[in-house]
Amino acid sequence: MTVDVHLAAGQERSLADDVHDGLTRPFKELPPKHFYDAHGSELFDLICEQPEYYPTRTELRILRTRGAELMEGVDELVELGSGATTKARILLEAGQAARYIPVDVSETVVRAAADELADLDVDVHGVVGDIERHLDRLPAPSGRRAVAFLGGTIGNFPPGSRRRFLRLIGSLLAPGDRLLLGTDLVKDPAIIEAAYNDAAGVTAEFNRNVLAVVNRELGGDFDLGAFEHVAFFDRRREWVEMRLRALEPQVVTIGALGLEVDFAHREELRTEISAKFTSERIAADLAAAGLTLRKLATDPRGWFAVTVAERA
Image (cartoon, rainbow, N blue to C red; front, side, top):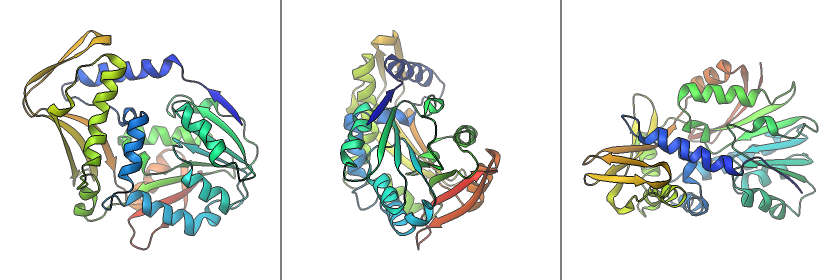
């Protein structure tokens, strides 16, 4: 296995910049990528097991039933924000790809990929980096490439940023290459909201964990118990917003930044948006990024989609 590391001190700098920028805005927010420290990743795996959380199960069903079709003619699989290798294994077993390139901010996750896929005849070339900053560091392609960005993570980007990121992915594709894009689809708002408000409270703990990351990495003194989890579906924008609501007026200190942050009673801090898509929106976003929709694979209920796109 080969591993290229492109983070080191840059990761901490990114967190510091994001926290300073986000907590000094009139409407406070933090980017969702900072949920995923070791504990946050464990919590997200647990979220995926909750009965209310349909996206992961539904996407896996699509990959299992349509994997051979999605991977036809592909020589190497690049997975952005790879995490666990569950989805990669399904795709690699369904096709003939000889190389797998997991890209993740966690070196532990990237190195584990080789062990988890050791029974497959696949070369693993891992990249430890931020998918928004280090995609130009990927190894040169070894044949026809499929770039997978799954899990509905594209929905965490606001519309303008989403199209810029899709354009960046498009720059990785040569003629004959493809993008495999996982998108959660618009459906009954009650089904969507339940997925982000599980009865066991796992998503609430996951949401508050971003405050623990700030405390640990930047010397913050957030009281996690002083914030409650809020998640709702914005019907006009067709996205979920996750927020943390202050239960009382308070002042939070971020020691490493020399920053004091005031929270009013019931003031909210946005931690995630998760856009839901229609086929028309997917096609429009792809077209704006110079990509063409070739195939839309969905489950029987039409709750989730895995899209195949190519450079226009």
